[in-house]
Every structure is written in structure tokens, then in C-alpha cells.
Image 1 (spheres, rainbow, N blue to C red):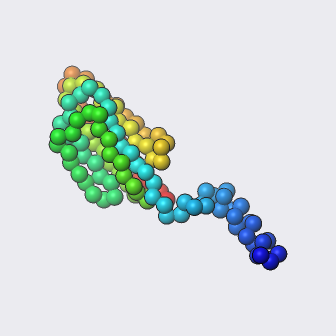
Image 2: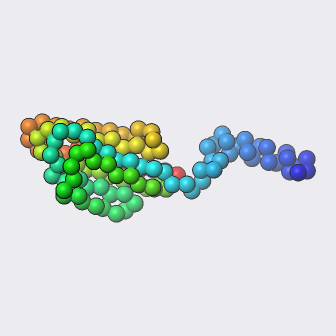
Image 3: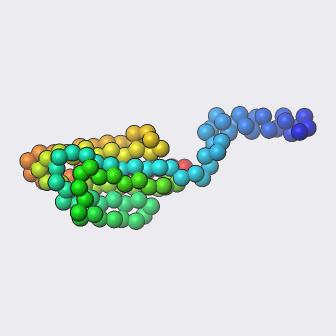
Amino acid sequence: MTRRTARLAVPMLLLSALTGCVGSAGEPHTLVLSATGTAALENVTYTVGGETVEEKTATLPWEKTFQIRSGKWDLVIRHRAGDVQAIATVDGKLLTQGAGGGTGTGQVQLSGSIDD
């Protein structure tokens, strides 16, 4: 490595480290949607990567894991009497959470986006 190359490489590595770009450009993120509680579920509907799926026979505890580079996602849990806690994590870090419950029917909804 010449002195000129070293002078250019060091600032570029420092800039990359400071912006969090070393080794992460274009890598997918792990999105985990999960729910726990005592309620019976009517259905779980989620949209990830532009694809919507409805699960009519879902039960608690419930969890789905996705590999996603970027984009919007949405989770809707329709339930009967009881309680439901829903959590979304990205790369192991809490992104958002919500809860619902009672003696009748209800709904818990989470949504967000991942920017790369």
C-alpha cells in the first residue's frame, strides 16, 4: 500500500464506521412479529414486503420471522375475550408494541417501516 492509498483508505474506513455502513449495505434485517396472551384469536393478518397473508386458525402464542431489506409492514390481530400483547422487533431490538383485552372482541394493530 502506498502512502497516498493509505491516506485515502483511512478516512474512508473512518467515515464508513461512523455512519454504520461497514458490512451492512444491502443486508436484510430480521423482523419478528409476535403475540402472546389469553384470548382466542379470530384471525391474524400481516403485510410484509407487499404480500398480505390472513391466518384464520392462528393461536397464541403466535410468531413469524421475516428477512426484509426495507419497506412497510403491518400486523392486525382480531381477538375474542381475553388479552393480547403484540411485539415487533428488528434485529433483536424492540421496534413497537401494543396490547388489547376485555370481555368482548377487540383488535391489536402494529405497523412500521424499515429503512435501509
